[in-house]
Image (cartoon, rainbow, N blue to C red; front, side, top):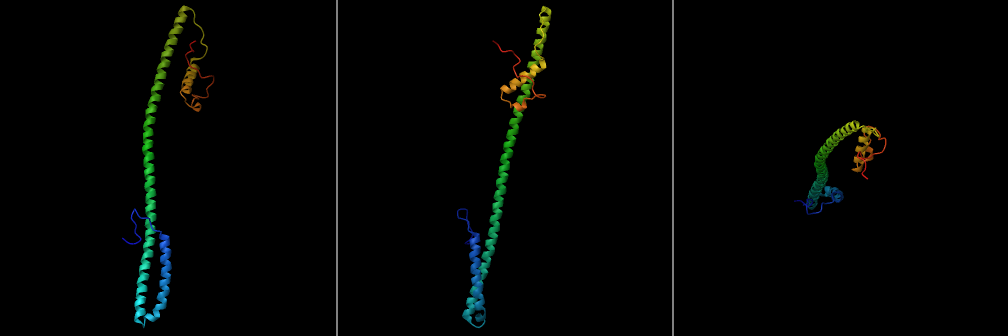
Amino acid sequence: MTATATTDKQESPDLDALAHDTQARLEELHEQWGRLSLDALTDEPAASELAAVQSEIASAERLLEQARLAGDERERRKQEAQRAAEEKRRAEAQRRAERLEGELRKTARAVDQGAVMFGNAVVGYLAAQDELVSAQRQAGTQRQPDHLLGSSLESALVHGLASAGVPHRLLDIGGPITGVSRPLAPEEK
């Protein structure tokens, strides 16, 4: 492991500072190289010092390249972590959507069952009303209905929906409701 490598427990190095410091050192080394170049041709100690400077330059250039590659890798890992987080968020949202779709299907079945129950109750009401009218005719006491049955059923349906908390904007069944929403059965006194 090199000096710039880190483990999960170590703090990530400041690559910009590392590159800046290394670049500054490279400039110093290049100045030394220039000063030593002429003397190194005739002086053995200067030639040895120049070789050491050239070796340090090569090391510094490798360190700069490593810092650049490390920066690229850091960015790649950051983007990968962001992609993974986004995938996780989407997967969680998908699981939630699937669960909610199941709940929606369940409540839709309950609405359908309620509608059938309402329809059955209306059929029963109509049958009872027909029997009442027939009996009143036979007794000679038939009276005219106070209102149309269709609007009474609609009014009763809207009343039931509103009583259950259905938003008012959804209560315009077949067009705007005219009249008052009220139960079909008269209130008992």
